[in-house]
Length: 91
Image (cartoon, rainbow, N blue to C red):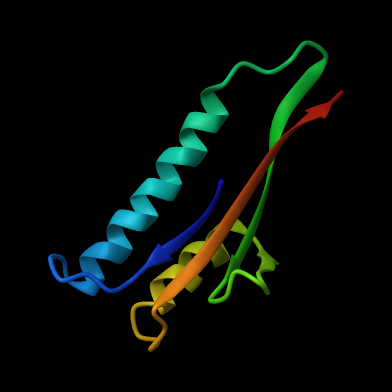
């Protein structure tokens, strides 16, 4: 998943947008975890990247990712970028 989330909307307040985006990200992670693993692999491995600019995202952990998204509520940024990479880990 590579997506830019925009924080300006005429229909929804900024706080509601952030909560909706967090929900969307958590649902994506749950959906990926439910997928069947290829034969010989034991688990899924997730890597996360966050940035206020698509050109310079930096690697973060899941708990930090949600914190950065929450912090976007108070920042004066127009959008933020999230990248989630999933790969299977062998035995």
